[in-house]
Image 1 (spheres, helix red, strand yellow):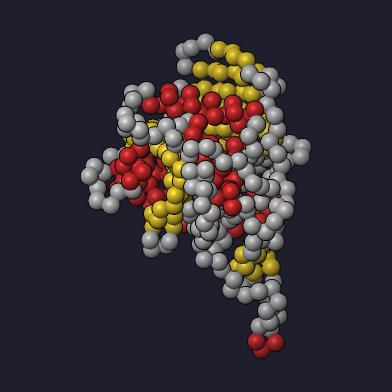
Image 2: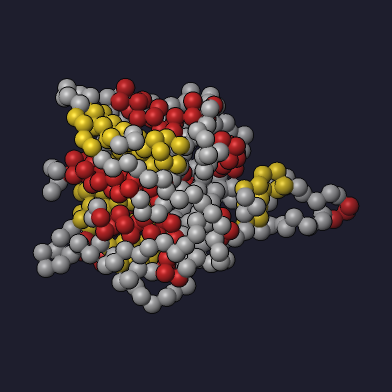
Length: 408
């Protein structure tokens, strides 16, 4: 099955291209999500780190250890010139000529806050990899549990940031995960992973696989020490893997590992996967990169820089971790991939890669639905509430229902 949802100025067109007629429904005109702007304070609002079910402020979870091997002013001994910056990301991440990294405060490049909390959603952090100190944030919908013991789909969410920036507990991701938990509804797990250039790919993909192995252990019946919220509320047979930007890239690779048999998740079952503003690349430019849309929030120069910092040293954008259809990438044709939902904002330099991904899956006979949002920018799904994000939630809910009818 291949479906396409095309959000043009006032129309959503749903096309089902395997033996059925096109259907047309009406929707409101999408509204643009707000662009990034500098935060007015150095720390995110405390309200962005707790829900109304967790009213007591607490310190935010510490991120992975920062690497500050050598400050820019350092002078090497014996009169040698100090190392110089070879890559710089917004002044927040600097890679030096000797391989050292300086990582600074991201608050200046965070969206302004606070973002709204969602009433009734509970959340807490759990450790899924004690060796590396990696955590996940669990969000539980008010629709879960109760006297009937209702169990909900499980949504594994990987955050974005070009594999180099952002963290799982930052306000923008915290806010949208609360909304996903409440409105789908679902048990949402927002996953921390190691970032480049301190930990180049495939480190993040390995962490994603480790998390799915942890989830598999949680799904085992009668497991000792199971996370209570998951035991009470999670329907592991309806697990969805999703992510935004780099997190969408990570979601693809984790799902491909599961489909190939390299990663076993049974008794959990991945019923589908959802890619928002997916971060893919290739040496050959796609149309949206060659002729970028006006006023983009993410530039080609920045995506190239992310790849130089995230991929193995010396790799090109045709590396299999960047380009799933590159010359050295294993074919997806033999893999029993679950149904996919690809969300492609039109004002995004990566839009061409998303369109290609959906088209390639369709050509291979895979079940894929494409939702285009021509007026939206990269990563709009994690922005402020808008008509576009409202419509996206509805598309997602329909996708979840279509993938799980046989499990309910």
